Length: 231
Image 1 (cartoon, rainbow, N blue to C red):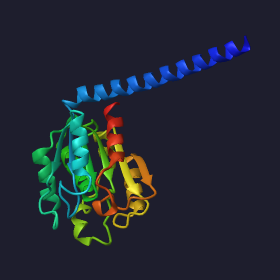
Image 2 (image 1 turned 180 degrees about the vertical axis):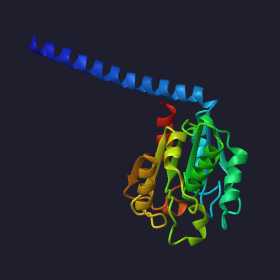
Image 3 (image 1 turned 30 degrees about the horizontal axis):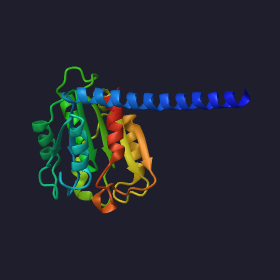
Image 4 (image 1 turned 90 degrees about the horizontal axis):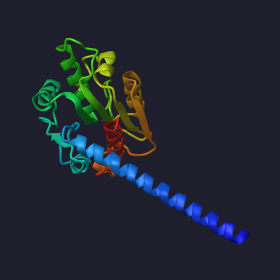
């Protein structure tokens, strides 16, 4: 009798385990399906950084992963990336980005401050500066203060940011940084995150998240975008 009860207990446990596994798989499929259904209206714009291009780093990889989910993606080719000008970069965003609750922006390095300056510019012309203009943004290796090793980029940080307005513009804000970033010190990214009241993700390694650091893929950005999509 005891042996029979033991066998029965094992069968029940296995059944529960299988049911939970199937439930988890079904839940993921449903969530992915919801993202894909919504994806027809979702727009993600990726803004690269200084001396970069849409073909570099992890931008094309991220774009392909999002497009596979039905999300509309545009990786902007920013003008004159070796000698960038803030107004020219803002103009590029202004000409290409369609703002709305299902618009999401991803920036890398100089692309981060460009996104923030652009959104602030758009808010100036908005009657109600305390309402959301986009669904969210993810900033990788971002900064808002001058970089001592790249003084040629000071023009991007000269105009102060209104962080209260930027928080209101986007309900979902994420900043990602690596402790060993030698180009944008992680302390600067942390300060940016604090000012934006954003979710801050700090990795032990990663450098500046470039190809030269071994980054041709960026699952961390994809995961955070997917989490935002599901909200």
